[in-house]
Length: 486
Image (cartoon, rainbow, N blue to C red; front, side, top):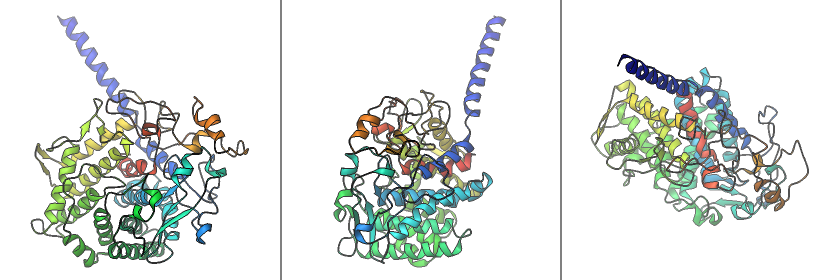
């Protein structure tokens, strides 16, 4: 009997040791560094001398020329060569929120300057895209013609047509999200560059007014965007922008706008480039927790309760919980699921920061939740993404010993133009590179792919864009979470 107990104890010790070694092997600091490197690989335009991702080169240097506007710069949204303004703006808002909340943590890891550089590459472009108060360029390139070719951005031959919104062709969602991005970025730059911060805020205020006074869905004005990034409404972007402008200015008019909202969003099932209600609810909940708005009057308690309903559903203590895979991943949608997991993880991390100083709990229908539980949830999701999952695979490219090698990404999948400058033609790129069953020649460090299915299964194939395509909106929310955990 004693020998059986000894064997059992050794087995338990072995299991504990294995679990500990898996978790101990997760290097949040390294993942943080790679997450910011990713944005350098997504850069469009003239690359700076300090560019660290060396397999990339200059690209799209004539963007905007068809409209007589300089639209060089910004980011390619995912694995293609189009600059979609709607998700680009949300990417910048997420990078800025990550930086605003965790600037000290980023600085401690010597990553604050890289985070600000990633934001500024986007905001410099968004400023260019806003040449007049009520004009905003929302897309360069066309998804249809771009997706028909498989070419590096450096020698692409696809059309670079520009598309805009204006007073006659409005887009409150696009203008509102861009206002949110610039307002959030203005806070991120307040100490590092006060003059630039002021410029960002000026553009943010103008864009909010444009969005508010000229209502409309942006894809009604920029039809080509609708097939790829169609917006379901603009009320959320207006609240989101107003919340950021209030935080940046402390101006009562933005608080009044939030207080007079007829629709605070209700309980949401996602937080994404399309649906910002959760973000606005969380920012208002911060005001409630800090006693800056009354907790039990007007819509303020609604915002807070609805933010907490979303969090409760993520932590599996709500009335309608977010699905989890058998391996423990929050699973929202089959297409690019990890972008939704990433935003939910950032919300949980930030909300734990808001609750902690007040020692305030969340009252979920399934029980009371304290701040540490939210951080535990965030850590569990990051650990899964970084390799603590049934496949033993990191879904952050370049991190760990096993990660996706066939990311659906034109630039990464084709030999660097610096190694072989021979032009890759539109169709020949498919034959020579897309259909090649081999690892990408360039490692897209820090990219978060779409991720596994609801059974934890993953197919590492370039053709499987639902799982294998990375996007700028996927990695941005994790910058803040990784900074907190590192």
